[in-house]
Image (tube, one colour):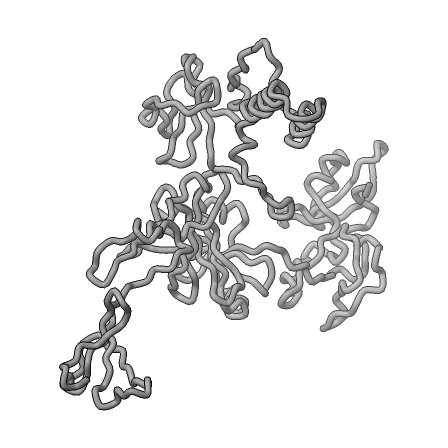
Amino acid sequence: MQTKKVPEPQEWWVSNDGERIAYICGFDPDGDPVYQINECSKPDIDLMSAFLAEYHHEPLCDSFDWQPASPIDPGEGWELLPVGTVLEDGDEHKHGDGWCPTVFAGAVYLESDGNIYRRRKPMEQWPKWAVGTGNRLYRTDSWEQVFWVTSGGNEFLQADPLYYKSRWSEFKSLTKAEALARVKAVETWPKYYICGTWDHAAYVRKDSDGRITTICRDGSECRWDVETKLTAVLPEGWREVTKAEALARVKPVEPVATDRTPDNRTAREAIKAMLKILNETVGVDADHNAEAFCVGEQWLTDNPEAVERIATPLVTAAIESPDDWVTQDRVPARPGIDDRRYVWNNRTGATSWDDSAVLCWPHGAVHGAQINNSTLELRCRRRDLPPQPRLKRTDTFGRDVTEEYGLHDETDIVTKCIPVRLWVRREMRSDSGRYYVSLKISPPSDGFTYDEIKIGPDGFYVESNTNDG
């Protein structure tokens, strides 16, 4: 621990306000300093603690007329070091009209040091915050990336960080606290609420300002009008809780006890049991057949999910939750339900997700739309994903034949039936069996040279006069 310097005889000390200079004459029997404040004054005596609190030693002072030197400029990008600083490599000291590197790295810069001025280049501090043109708030973690931060907390990567580096000195620098005070807190969802006077409901889940769901004691959803209650100021009896506290209030319905233990064996074990019953006797035994049938029927009753379940390869099997975020590319953006963000087309960055209610498009915004060299993306919870649009199939007369052709999903091909007619040129028809046939939608313009090919009970035919053979 560094001790504070005490006066020595024949030293000059200056008051902290710079108005008085004290010359140390010596000490009284108690060790307190005896000093003069001008050449004509009588010596004063003061307690050592009081003197040290009011005066400090000034090594360059040599008379009562001494004046402190003008503040020295350490140079652009440098800062002067206070007395007591531990010197480091790269620090410099004042030498004549210039500066020289220190050779005492690791030593403490003392007041009695002959080189009274020392300087150091401060380390770059990150992140930096500043307000620039248009009162915009900017943040940078390095000069390779600069972000514009909106009042809502969204960040947008700027295209030319070197431009902002060159102009940063023109911006108004802010501390982190000052910068964050300009940004509204981002809401986190979902939120959970309980009411001490409610017995029928476990808790209320608020997924957004417009989506509120009441959960009953058994875990099911129930309908109760609480939208008007859960405002910014909660009514008496209501309080916000954590998710764990909310879920702890749910008590699932206990299964009803039965006299028979359900048959929850695997399908393989159940089939082996049936085969064992059938193989116990040789030949056909109606009683054993009925017993094996009852085993299989009971297993299907006790394991209904096994009947409906579709086998999925383990490699691709995945657990899907209604709370999963999924791409919403089926309908235009739905405020309060869908979230949106923009992805730069060069894939260098993206905005944070936000409610699609902030979109101000003149027409419905859809997933994949292009704007300002970026792509709009939409997402929603799996439970809110709208159904696939139903495809429709029509014939050439515009009639709906969807059901007739079995078109039920997007994998079916939508086709349009176009009727055509076959024609054969009269002069090209011969007994050799070779014909030149044309396929046309409407009769040919020179129809007098063609015969139309028709179909009857006996196959294709053409109508001709008897004289033509």
